[in-house]
Image (tube, rainbow, N blue to C red; front, side, top):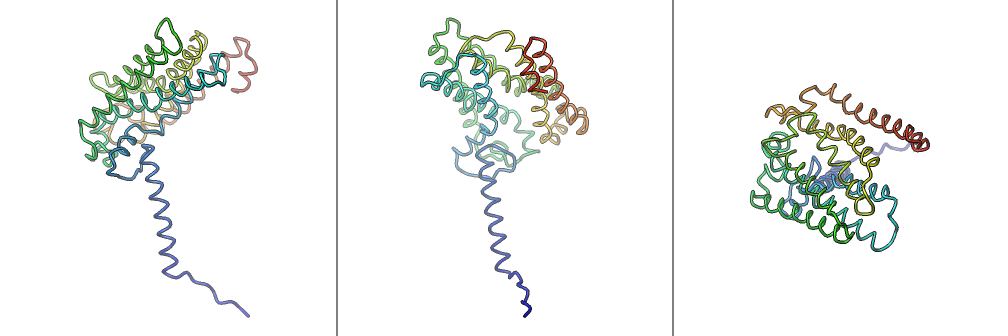
Length: 290
């Protein structure tokens, strides 16, 4: 005989709703720990401190260190080199990227009060003194890692320390007045792109070999592609940027034009690098990029 249709009861719907809410809450908690938009709120000060460092943004820097190590031509898989690599990645990711993100959030607190009022600083979840202490600890921690790497590598010239000091300065003038490069459109985008691409690559290469002009040139080219990374980051802050008069590229050119600038900066750079590699006789790697 024919079967009676099975109808979902209100209890079934409640279970589904509870499961969906549970998954959504877990996702919000993960975003909170990674420092991503749409994060849940917490009273745990150490989770808040971690959120300010935005661990999700450490990945490109850590990867850049390993790219530089590989480009040096001297990296070998042994305990000594693994230790150096881990220390360099810790310096570039948790310490200096964490410092960069924390100081950026501090100077962006007025913008975040408009765009993301739930973030730790505008919401009052962490105090001014606690933020300043975190900035100092992360910055000094990064410098100490760099000094130790120069000693470990027995460098006659403290190249890693110099790169670290330069990167810290760029991070500061990117976020802080009076320069506040992030408010200057092109300057800010390139400062961010170069910091994320060139500096960790140079650090990794300096730890395991010597910086060479050709590799430095290529990483500077790829830093132009970093414009795209920076522009993507600016889309989410358009409302606050516009209200406070900051000329980020999406604000200055509009969403449509900024979108094409973003894509073009990445693709044109990739093509330029491919042609450069072909010009110096590296046809295989040029073809890979094509």
